[in-house]
Length: 40
Image 1 (cartoon, rainbow, N blue to C red):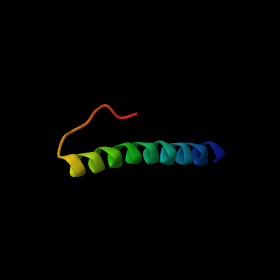
Image 2: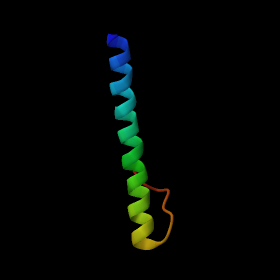
Image 3: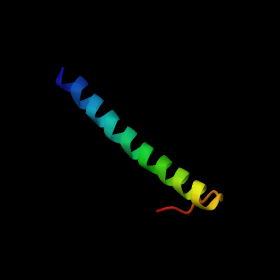
Image 4: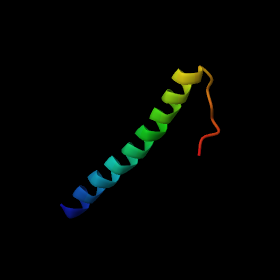
């Protein structure tokens, strides 16, 4: 059961990272209307 909880927390953390990257792409695209892949 502990392993399941650890997998859920780990998956949520990775999901948050993906969401932040996607949010960065959307904010840049909406502000400039140019897709910028040179983030980071």
